[in-house]
Length: 267
Image (cartoon, rainbow, N blue to C red; front, side):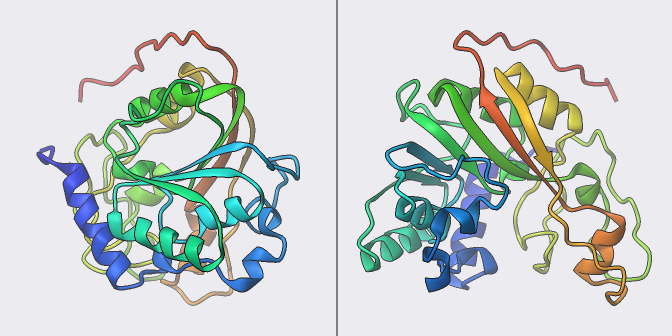
């Protein structure tokens, strides 16, 4: 059963995490500003220079992403559903004399922006919090200038299928074609955020949906968290068997976008 207001539910959860200084609500450190672009773009996907580029940090509040990209010379807008996460961006920007625009809004509604407003869109792990990832991609395609770069990170579907309990073995708990959100995690972990509604997005949606929205995928990496020597049940041990994340570099290729239907089984 779909909840009546997943955005409101997740807004409350993220506001709570901001108050508790969750790991995603810890502002950037001094060392992040020594070579700011390198600290967030290890693969060099942004070409080493973003000075003067219009950057949207999407669903990226928390005092880290926006300030670092602003320090690297980007003209930065941070959009997030959590006002308290955005407050951390305001605080860091003030402390470091950086200019950042913040917008409290859901990632699947970018109607507050004009078409082709951004040349770069950066989206940390967040698409799992909305039921319709295809609409997110369409929204991004509309506000991105042709040729712009979209860098996003996602939870791999199998990682969300596997239970988050500790142990030496990991069990598939959720159906791959599940449409309703997963039951909220009761405790925070490096796999799930406590109290949030999360959705499994299939590879056809994650990759095929991005291509259908007018993006060409240029690169893909799986951030390495595996540690075969780690204690059973730990994040490093789990990641040795189940890769948690995927990071994608895509480029906006066309202005006119056709959105063909994504096949979905009737089950």
